[in-house]
Image (cartoon, rainbow, N blue to C red; front, top):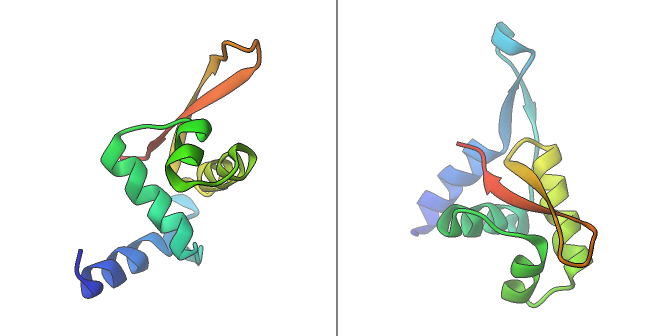
Length: 96
């Protein structure tokens, strides 16, 4: 992706409509690392924190925190499922 295209994507990701139809905008200022995660999930279709951690060579808790943050900001959706260990895991997808 060309540099100018990346800048355009950043600008689109930095603003979200708040307040329904009132057209009030709030800057979100997500980091380049967060944008990279959104792009990776867009290419993969979906991911868990452990898969993202393995791909980015980061810890699973770090990947989990980054995904949760993007979910809380509204960039990702998540679906809960039972992990083989007996805990809860999430599959994250980019919001359409």
